[in-house]
Length: 146
Image 1: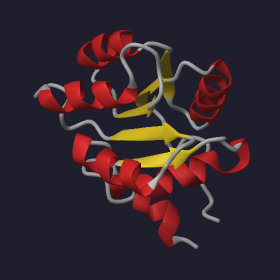
Image 2 (image 1 turned 180 degrees about the vertical axis):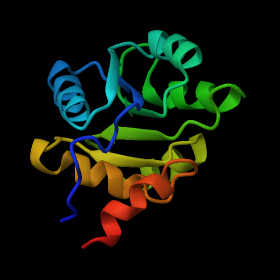
Image 3 (image 1 turned 90 degrees about the vertical axis):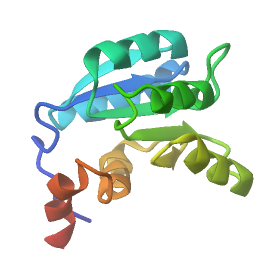
Image 4 (image 1 turned 45 degrees about the vertical axis):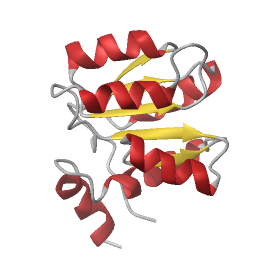
């Protein structure tokens, strides 16, 4: 298990989108613990507005939300030149093979399975971002010290 310093995400703005308050709290808590500024919303439409204004370093989004879900959010973000470069990690309880293929086609960088575990969330998240453009080189040293 890599030794991840508590300031690993210092100065990172991360947008977290989930209509499940428990998941939203866990992600926000852990991100804040590691120095990130976690911005949260329970609504995909609001998330799109925040992302366009804030241009966060990373977006973590649930897939299943009413009205404007994570699938549509990712599609809209990738169509917009102002947000197309932002890595998006999906949160899902249903990662079937078809869903995984569709995730990458729509523009998600990767995904995390729910339920989330506080003790391993940061390691799981960073391991997915090691090869993300603009982020990977910053995270790689935490995994090469093992």
